[in-house]
Image 1 (tube, protein in one colour):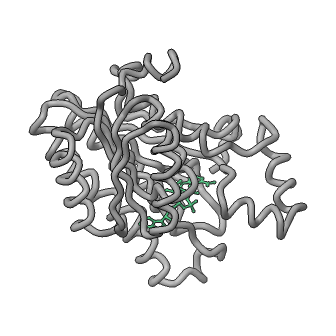
Image 2 (cartoon, helix red, strand yellow):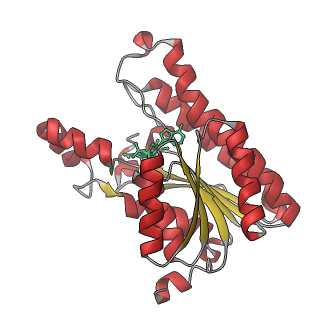
Image 3 (cartoon, helix red, strand yellow):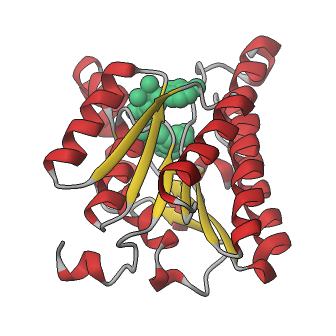
Length: 261
Ligand SMILES: NC(=O)c1ccc[n+]([C@@H]2O[C@H](COP(=O)([O-])OP(=O)(O)OC[C@H]3O[C@@H](n4cnc5c(N)ncnc54)[C@H](O)[C@@H]3O)[C@@H](O)[C@H]2O)c1
C-alpha cells in the first residue's frame, strides 16, 4: 500500500460497491482495495464482475462477488448481510448503480422510461441505503457514498427522468445524513460530470465532433477519468473526511461553476 492509501484509514475495513463490473464502480472497488479494504462487489454482468475481481486480486486486494440487480431490495439486503457474514462489519458502502435515459424532450418521455429509471437510480439507492443504515446503526459507525451526478444539481435538457432521479439521490443523501449524523454514520454523494467510461468511449468513436464540442465547454477541457470519481468516493468514506456529511461533492472539472448539470 502507498503512504497516500495508508492515510485514508481504510486498511482492514469492509464494504460494498454496486455496479462494479465497469466504469466508476470498477474504479471505486479497485481504489478501496488498494487502500487496504475488503470489498464485496456486485453487478448484473458476470463477465464485468469477474474482470473487476481479477484486477483487485492482481493488485493484492481481497474481494468477493455477488451477481445482482441493484434495483432489488433482496439484493441489497443480501449484500449487506454477506459483508457482515464474511468480515464482521459494514464500514463503508458505495451505492453507485445508475442508468441513463434516452435523449428526448419532457413531453416525449414515456412513463415506462421514468419507472425504469427510478427503479434503479432512486429505489435501488433507497433500498441499499435502508439496509446499510440499519447495519451501520447497529454497529454505531459507517460511511455511505452515493453516486449522483451534476445532473442532480440543475436542469438537464433532454434527460428529464435522469435529472429528476439524481435530484432524488441528492435529497436522500442529505436527509439521511442529518438523520444519522449523531449515530456515527456519514452519508455523502459524488456528483460526477462527464466521465470517460465505456459508453462515452463508444460515443467518442461514433461522434467525435459532438464529443469534442462537449469537452470544449468544460473548464478543464477534458472529461474525468473513472479513477478520479473513485478517488473522491473513497476519500468521502475515509477517516480524512470524518467531519463531512451530507456533502454533494462536484467532481466535474469546473462545470458546476458554470451552473451546468
Ligand atoms: N459516466 C458518466 O459520465 C457519469 C456522469 C455522471 C454520473 N454518472 C453515474 O455514475 C454511475 C456509474 O456510471 P458509469 O458511467 O460508470 O456506468 P457504466 O454505464 O459504465 O456501467 C457500470 C456498470 O453498471 C452495471 N449496471 C447497469 N445496471 C445495473 C443494475 N441495475 N444493477 C447492477 N449493475 C448494473 C453495468 O453492467 C456496468 O458494469 C451511475 O450512477 C451514473 O449515473 C456517470
